[in-house]
Length: 45
Image (cartoon, rainbow, N blue to C red):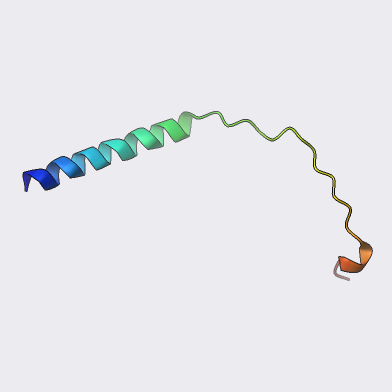
């Protein structure tokens, strides 16, 4: 039972740390413009 409790607390702690890191991560927005030409024949009418 103690191994299960230790693993549970380690997993819970790692999950909490991961959520904090992801919530504070300042991921930059894409800066490259993408221009793609689509033929009129492929568009729905």
